[in-house]
Length: 369
Image 1 (tube, rainbow, N blue to C red):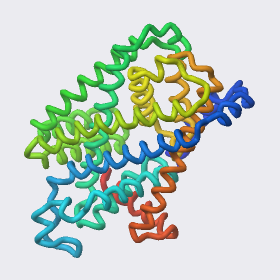
Image 2: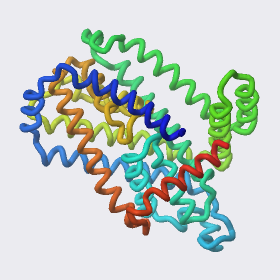
Image 3: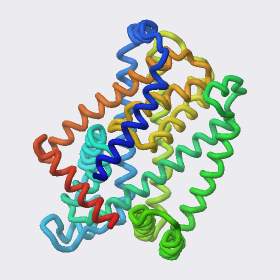
Image 4: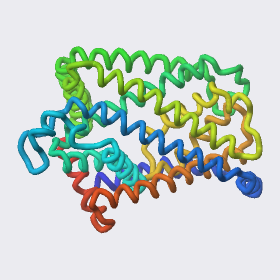
């Protein structure tokens, strides 16, 4: 029933986005833009996406380093217990699990791929799934902070945008919101590192007094406890600092992916969009917006976010639609192709796909209950 509700919500969000994106589009012009693309250059942008995934894996490895595997169990050994996860899992093995997770995200709602990734690493190392999930929650927090920083920087440096009425609000409003959220996130991260247990207890007391459904309160408290527990593992801030730096590098590479994909179109985009500031803006706005629930693969929401970001720069709608569609399809196709290979390398078959997803869902239910 919960899955049906999530799917229904995703259908509504994606359907509304697709309606506004595709209404009154001149498809002949969209097709003309697509026919004039530089395909080899576009494929380079997809390779940059895979490079960004590899950097995400490197960051995950840094976050996993402080964890110690159980001293007993079929997958543990004295040597690997002393060395932590890196002694057992190579970066290429972790990359396979990362890409398998993204493969699942293309088919299942609510970003189930993150749960699958935690499940696969727990299965191969003996680590508790909730412990692995804590590192994933932390890396998502770093992604959010890095993207907010990029968005705020781009809005502060953005040239005068008289066309901002096309999206219904001023960039100044968005800059204030991004600034407040960024400061709150940085202060919250520092406080969690210093006082994680006390903050977890405080949140639990506050949530118990709010008029929210019990399931929502449990999930919020469990996420905070998991995040606090994950932060507690880092007795030295060094892995966190490394992860923060790599997070910025990840999204710089993603901005390069956007730049290369934009350059692959024969029709030139506005100079402000393809400049450094414009690239930071579209990269951060699109990826922050993907936190909104939608259909698997972010169908509809991805296109709407790309077109909304381009509206700030007065990009012709047909050109924006052409870019959004081919860029999203290219990412999905590349992720599915690489993810399918990675999936097979986990010694799983396609027939086992549903049981693995169900196992991840069970881990999630145990996590929230």
